[in-house]
Amino acid sequence: MAEHEDEIMMALAHAISATYSLLVDVCDALPVPITLPTDRHIPATNAVPAIQRVAALAKDQPMGETQEAQLFTGCIHLLAAIDLYALCAARFEETRAEGVGANLVYGDEALRHLLVWLLVNRLD
Image 1 (cartoon, rainbow, N blue to C red):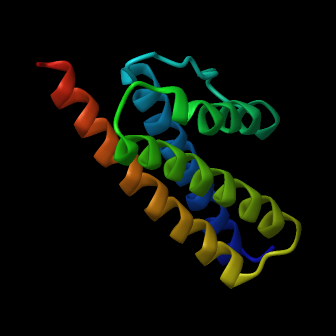
Image 2 (tube, rainbow, N blue to C red):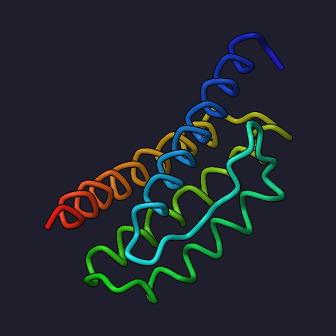
């Protein structure tokens, strides 16, 4: 892989990690908290099933439909980013890398809105 591609892959790996950390914070703030693996380095083989579990449990959280949708959306976009990252690692394609970034933007946005809602409503 060329140096430029390596830099892109490192940046994407960092961004995936940051989105996962955001999901951990969201899950801790849920009405019924969900614990996710939080080791220093979490392999995708552990993170993916945990994220899938959160997506499946989103509908069971005692919160509104919008908030359930935000949690589910954040999870599925993070999962899509991880899948595209793996494909990109096997054979780098600029469009795949851009897809990782796009999925992370949408996932982050949904999770950030949800986290704000959770924190504001926790104070009531």
